[in-house]
Length: 320
Image: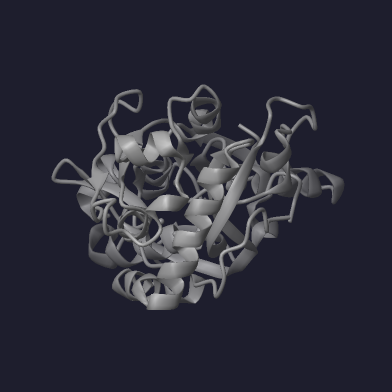
């Protein structure tokens, strides 16, 4: 993977893929929403701690509170998005299954993607679930663009695999087939993501090859980038495959977008936990292992048509 590796991969966030203007047209298969500084989220259900099989593995303060606060950019369907005032999608469903094992609720709270790790380290959240790619830079607290240390880093409990896809207007009017076709063209995408890192690396390759750099336009949310593409103001949006596929299938009844080319730099999504919170990290890994074993995990992926991203085991810090 590139140093900046999907949704989401700078050290400050490599999203499975909208609320806002695009979601109105239709939210994709399987790299937001309103005021992203508020709590506007929801809780994923749980079994009571008295009968949850893995409750004893949690730190006592979390077990007593009965809640795990989850930071998430809730505008990335089908991974996470708002529906009738509630966070829904792949991540909330997985969180609910984990909650039944641990006897707690996972309470989703909305935030800008590139601020999530900062919020975790400031203890605003206890974990992050936001189609966030597990990368060495994030693990080590390194800014992917500068290579400088910017924080303490995080640990990841891996739970899904996805690469970046190129999303274009339906019919592919600009004839985009690969990253090389983006040289000298306008590309819109969400900032702070792995997709941004891939686009920046490709832009450097373009100039090295004697071509024009990519005209990169970045936005706080993916729906903003999708709107630019829909309007023809950009030729492509780079997105996590599940998100890209979901938008291609649903936006405008499937008439707005299509996915071109192969997935780029597939890697794991991880549930991020602060360094040092090893008991919480290990409890979540145990719960992930349990839902993979009991079949709940596979049922969730089948529900969202993203079984191609399934993992067979949950690793800690398995990203590269």
